[in-house]
Length: 446
Image 1 (cartoon, helix red, strand yellow):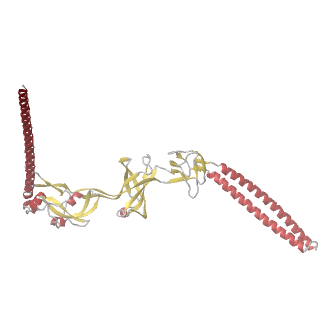
Image 2 (tube, rainbow, N blue to C red; image 1 turned 90 degrees about the vertical axis):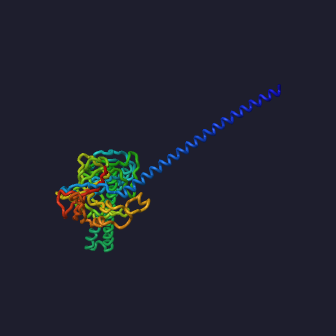
Image 3 (cartoon, helix red, strand yellow; image 1 turned 60 degrees about the horizontal axis):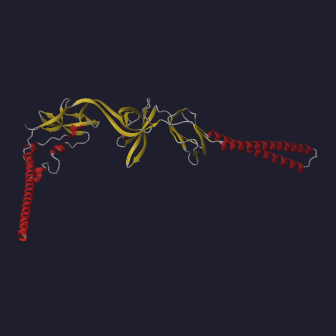
């Protein structure tokens, strides 16, 4: 029985082992199939990439050797119009008259009577500095003045007394009743009394000056508006200590009249020769980007300003601000009108940059230049072609291209002013209405 049992156990184990081997073989086959599929996918991807690359190379080669695509031209007629030449400059808006108000005295601020944006009139109280100490000093000055006046009266009485004694002794000396020694003594006493009187008068004057100074300081303790205007800034609060030493602290900033303002702009040295007093301008500010404000130049300053090596000249423009839309400190970009030309023959500036494609490039195949030449069929670096040479003119003389019978024809012209978009043409073999070429348009073949 034991042998039969052992035999059964062996058979069962063999069956399990055989099943395990079959499962392992199936897994290996599945893995091999997946690897094969991945290889096929990669192969297809590489073939697709090579095919697309070949198509691209073929297209580039075709475009290189067959560039005879029909051309047309974008044109505009030469026509008369008005040309406005402007000089652009940036700057800031400031009040016509702006005043800083400060305190000449040190002390504690008792009260502040105005706030931001308040309208004030000349002489109106803005703030009050404590005057207790000043009042005490004023009383001391009054007492000193009274004492000096009393001393003056005493000196004047002494002068009168010594004068009478001297005169009496002089009369008696004529009758030999007063000695010369007594006369000299009385004369000296009279002179000393006069000197004492003068000293007393000086003491009175000093006391009066001291009192006047103290009273002036009391008046200065009341800070008043020096002009009619509006309060732009306030830098003081009640209870604050003001220290006036070498520099007067600024407590308020007043603007006289915001209905008229000044625009300070910096004009570049290259443009300053065109800018003159009386020229008009228009400007914009960031707060109102869609609104243009008018201005007029009132001053072009000769002093140069240098910032980071750039030379500019400060120019002042008067601005009307009746609706108070503009505020001090706003940044503005101004266009100063330096010239206006009416009924001028104009061409777009784009026409000055046009250079036609050379005919030999559209009719003759390009020499072989290898794979790089096929991929990048542009011209080789080298000297400019003849068309480019013909368009190298000075600022006032240049060549433009007119469309005649469907072909670009060069015309030499003398240029005038430009506003950056259009340029005036003064002389040349042209008439109004001629079509000037702006650009080349390559038509697609059907």
